[in-house]
Image (cartoon, rainbow, N blue to C red):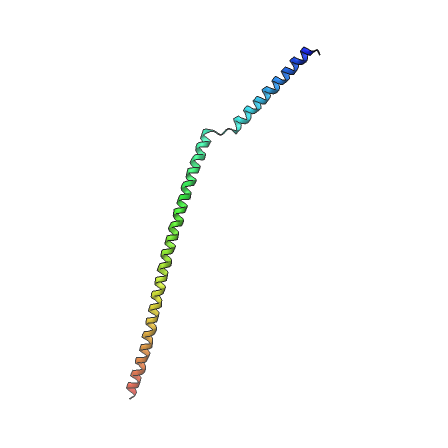
Length: 108
């Protein structure tokens, strides 16, 4: 093989290697490229996620407010119950005193 044949063979081999490399690069980019439809879908999913997070935050805020209201209402109810029980205790004590008084009055 003389020098000219060697240069031509080397050039052909290099050109084929370049062509295969370019084709492989094109295939990789063709299959890994993100389409506009995929980007639109990702954008829509991101928007829906954002809306879901806002809804969750609003729900948490509402539940915290509702819990505070119910806790306050429970405290008021417990205070009213304690006052009613105290009044009942006083009324029972007074009724017992009246019973004892009437028994003494009837005995005399």
